[in-house]
Length: 113
Length: 114
View (cartoon, rainbow over the protein chains, first blue to last red):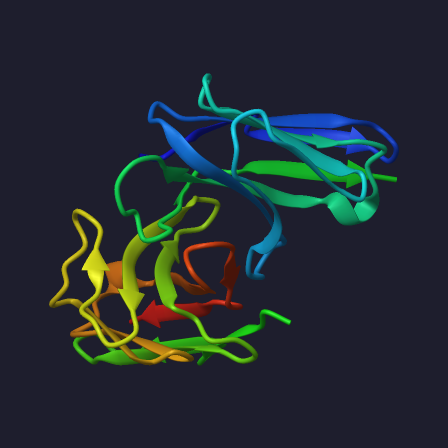
């Protein structure tokens, strides 16, 4: 059930871009993206509910390819505050899942000045 | 809005004792609450899903007699780690959602069993 995230870690200079990928072997109903800073709770970034949906949040956006069971998170013109571990959470399609999410292992993003 | 609290933030206990962790949604009514555990630099592993007034649904491999979950109201869920052992030491995080949509996470509880 656990999706696969790549890359495991990214190091950027301020202003650079990054893409984080999330793929599942199961059909998906939705994909949720979170950012977690060390020792803190994950913070919700966005949810993608429909195949092909794209969403944006400041300079952070995401896409969801339902057919490929993949989602990508795009961070443009990165800022120091973007540093943290990014998790994708996937909700399986079909049946009553009660909104359960299964999380990838995370991508550690470090932005340097 | 969408604030979730957890108590306590930290707990250290002796092996064999039971520990209760509370999760509260402060400004909304949560139809569903979820419990996760997270080991250092690892992913969030879903332990169980609970709905107010009904029995929790546990993920495969999670012992329901070991991790007791009570969802007494639309704003409170508790996780009790019974007869805790050192291997139960972890970061326990709850989340709450309305109508199976966005999950909002609590700040987590660090459990250390000596």
